[in-house]
Image (cartoon, rainbow, N blue to C red; front, side, top):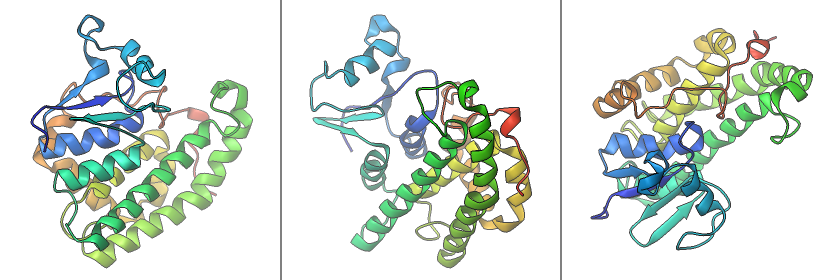
Length: 245
């Protein structure tokens, strides 16, 4: 682990994809600075994120946050950051098969995150929800009726097969990612998640165990945990809170 705190650079007003590495850092008790949540006078705020996006910061150019700085390393892409931190922070076994399995499962979690985002922005991320409302309703119905139960069935089978977690009985970084996915879906699509809860009891048990881990519980109760809102990946719109077909 680096002697200096990790620097996490992400938008300061939403959980978004930055929440996935943030959960790893919090669970491990790692020292880190949530850079954009610092005052602008201290080099934080939205201007710092924009500077990273525009390539006005030292290091390689990145397309978009989150960006993690660890010593001389500057890393982007949520899955890559989580893999890096998971291995550094002891949230995955050391053997190659487990590391690759964890990477695969984390990327699968992030695949579902992308699909959840596309329920409310199925046409284009550059359009407002109100400009694609009808398409969003249709996309959400398809997601909660077909895609979501398929994803839950898959994760449930993996947790059952491994005896309690995605990679094994011990908590790994994809487990923390799955927790965030479950929490986000419960916020955005509460009726659908309630309707499907019986098909994934072990997934929900795993999410509850993650939430009860001492450092995660403390984080969730703290102001460091930005509430879900209508600016992030997981958004609640009454029109999309539908029961699966």
